[in-house]
Image (tube, rainbow, N blue to C red; front, side, top):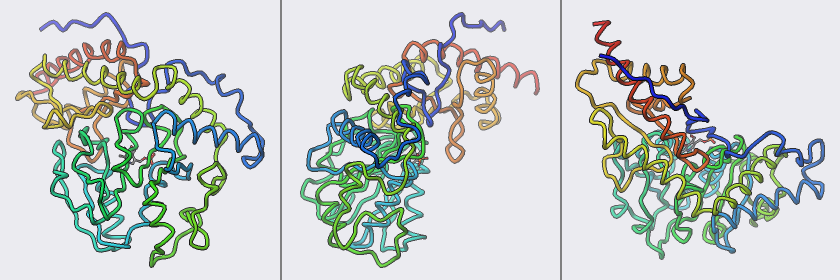
Length: 384
Ligand SMILES: Cc1ncc(COP(=O)(O)O)c(C=O)c1O
């Protein structure tokens, strides 16, 4: 069978789920104003860090009485800092439906060894939040980056809960509406939806999270890198730009650029619309082709950032090898980089659809996906 080679190529083949594509207008020259070789505690450095915090608040619509801090070690650092500082005061429910959520379960159960119940769903499914007990602390990941399954909303989280909600929102922030009144701890990394650099995390605390920090001391020791309080009081400096240790001012400049770009495309609303349009292009492609499908079972839970796909063609003999071969063909052609499913996830593809990706690039890439699929089916036949 003759397989047609598509005529159009994506201008940018970067569809990785992290680090994600830079904003389309990004250039290295855009970082020329970074105060390199200067102290981050000098006025120039502090001002940049403060601007990063306040612009984050503005773009994400974080309430004025919530604290926003820049912390070490990316999203992992931010989330573990929160777990180590706040959990153990009461029992917890650890909720997971893919590998990153599962990592936080391991932290609570095997490392912190707190009283915790584990509630999980398989890849493609989600946990029913109406069954959870929010008088306990509840830890979860808003968008499961490795399964492409997200919480559609926070409606099941009661406003008058007694426990805290700890939300890993790293592949959700800047692409999905986050209900701040339902979230006590929210974390993300710059390297995800805004296409920033890795290694810096953002930690957002509700007034109730601050209250927990100031009224509860965990039974275990805390390294300096995790310490958010001193003498029973929140270290306020962390939330105004006086970071715990030294940040990269080049990464800060890069994040400020990304925030400015976000504002130029309409802020959060604009970013959500861009991600929605990208994801819809992929979903429509799945609807039009009977050999590929979304891994998310319930359409209401489909991610608009990390869109995870599975091959469903009965002719495929080895699902994992087939998916890898398709991803490899697209990479070799320079059409799509880094779109293989996450190592712990079911075999398939994962296409990043966050706002820094152009819809025209997704649309140019999809015919090539069909080309790679058909080419691989033929290759499999020839090898049999
Ligand atoms: C949901 C989720 N949590 C945590 C992480 C880890 O992020 P980082 O490497 O920025 O710490 C990732 C990275 O992909 C993720 O998707």
